[in-house]
Amino acid sequence: MKNNDLYYNKEIETMDRGDLDSLIDEKVKYTIKYAYENSKFYKKWFDKNKIEIKSIKTHEDLKELPIITGDTIKKNQPPATNFFNFKSAKNKDIVTIHETSGTTGTPKSFFLTENDWEKYIEKYARTFKSQGFKSNDYLIVCTSYGMNIGAESMSLAAKKLKITTIPEGKCTFPIRILKNYKPTSIVGSIFKFLRLAERMKENKLDPQESSIKRLIAGGESFSEESREYIEEIWGVNVYNTYGSTEGTMCGECIEKKEFMSQKT
Image (cartoon, rainbow, N blue to C red; front, top):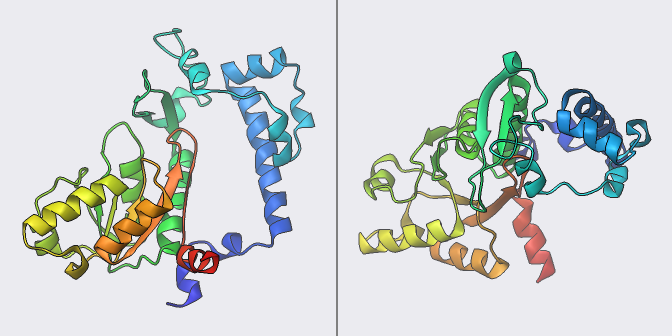
């Protein structure tokens, strides 16, 4: 595969480190100013902590700010309050409303504009591209569709790259999906990949002899030993994606394998 095939936005993704840091710093200054002017919470928070927003000039300055936890977010939305104090866009500009999974209690709410969606889609598209996806790939999405943004944003990113999606939502789909449609990739969790491989073997289908070329792992964290175990079972690379639903996400590219081989 040519290196150019691995870039979604080559100009940004191959930018010199110094230029990239400068770009990040400009975005940090814009974000801080926007939050102060458009969020009820952040206006009070900056003032209460006596933080002058103009003093935040680089991404390194963010380290000096007080930590905002998930509990803080929950205390600034219903049912704890009558308003979503973190919301920073006008109602007319909000196109979708989402929640986190709520595994630790009350789900955290967040509101997305058209611009937010474009950024989410670009992040996943960039990650898929760097993992070697092409327009002839068939991708099974095993993450749940609903108020959690992950599955839908991945599907839209795949559409942008002309990747065919099979939106199952769960990895408990019938084995015939693998036999009939010959998917090349699956997005799920390490544990889902393990259980799916077990079901395949029960149906006399060897994961290593299937059409799958790569696995994209997200959700639960996993050790390098777990990754290696799943790669051995399936005979393909397992790429990690990680992040927070209400924040941002990142993902490994194909260099993961080269990097790992250099360490051993």
